[in-house]
Image 1: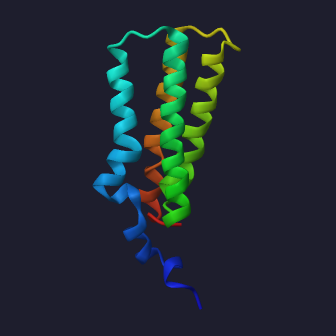
Image 2: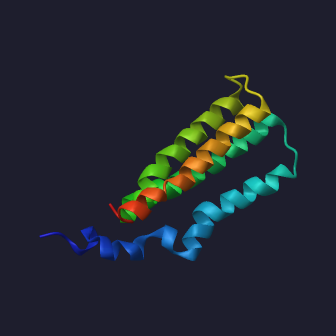
Length: 128
């Protein structure tokens, strides 16, 4: 017999991505900070460092949410955002010499992949 918390129908109450406060805290706030930072015109490596921190913040929200409620989207987007955070951190540290355009394109790809991770939920089910 399975526990009530293993039942996907009860997991929706634990899902931060289904609650307005959770969405704002884990994903809305970092996106807003990143958008606002564009106007600060920070040096490239500082922008990459901020981007790394914000992607890591969102990744942690997804990874913790996947653990809490087994949301399929979070199982996919958590690692994608975490890889993006590591990539941005490597760029921020100066290990690679990428231009701003290449860096911006890479971050855009990470964000698009995170958004596309909602598609499997539309095809299969929301909770794994």
